[in-house]
Amino acid sequence: MDIAALAMVMSQTQVRQDASIAVLKMAIEGPKEQMADVMAALQAMEASVSPHVGGNIDLWV
Image (tube, rainbow, N blue to C red; front, side):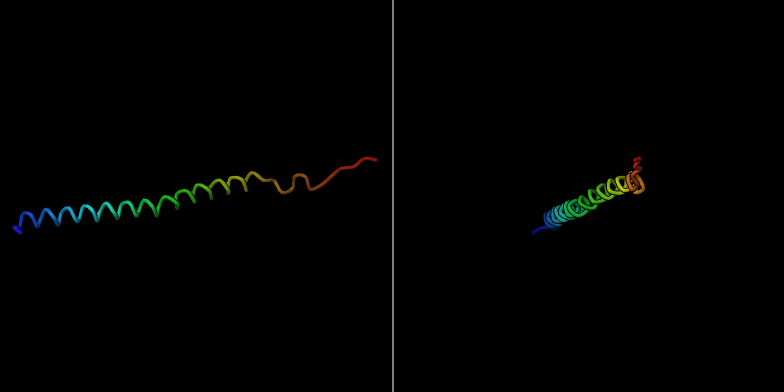
């Protein structure tokens, strides 16, 4: 095999490896971003809750 063909094969192998790593990173980071969105929504819900509301009932007889 000549040098040019070897260089081309090595370059193609590197491109495939880089693409595989990029896809793996997207697969790993996608759920992290979704979890961050869920946590932000939960924090917003917790902030909107008023624990003192509804704790007392005024009765007049």
